[in-house]
Structure formats: structure tokens, C-alpha cells
Image 1 (cartoon, rainbow, N blue to C red):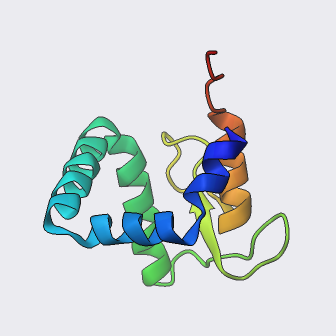
Image 2 (cartoon, one colour):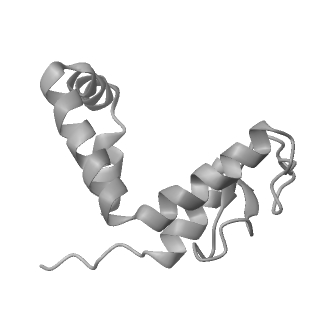
Length: 109
């Protein structure tokens, strides 16, 4: 798995991926995935919208990351049925939590 991650981080691979994402076909595929994800995860998107609405209007104050104190934080919902209960995390710690919750499947050899 580490081999593939290192390969994906090579500049030429990243440039190729970025070009595909900006292409018409790439945008269509990405938009289809986003639409499908929004349909399959309605509670997730509803919770996100509820928090964004309240932050933008000053009802909820965005807090720094609870792990490192970084002020560039985002809300993490441990439970989508409680949409206004969020943990404020920076991108790094938010990703770490999701990797712990959804570990990558083992590679079959």
C-alpha cells in the first residue's frame, strides 16, 4: 500500500491526475460520484449544511482544532443524528479520525 501511495505522490502522476480532474470527462465523472454520494448520505450532507448555516450567521462559533489548536478547523460529526454536535478538527486530524474509523482493506496476495 505504501508503494502505491508513494507512486501517487510523484509530481508527474499528480499533474496527470489534476489534468484529468479538470477535463470535461473528469468533471462529469466526479460530479456523478458527488451526486450519488449526496443521495446515499443525506444525513451527512444535511448535518454539514446545518452547521455551515449557523457558522455563517454567527449562531455557532468555529473553534480551533481540539487536538493541536490550529484555527483553520472544520466540523466533524461523530453522529449525524445529532447534527449540531461537532468536533472541531484541522484537516490533518480530521483525516486521521476518518482513517481510524474506516481502515483500508488488507491487500490480498
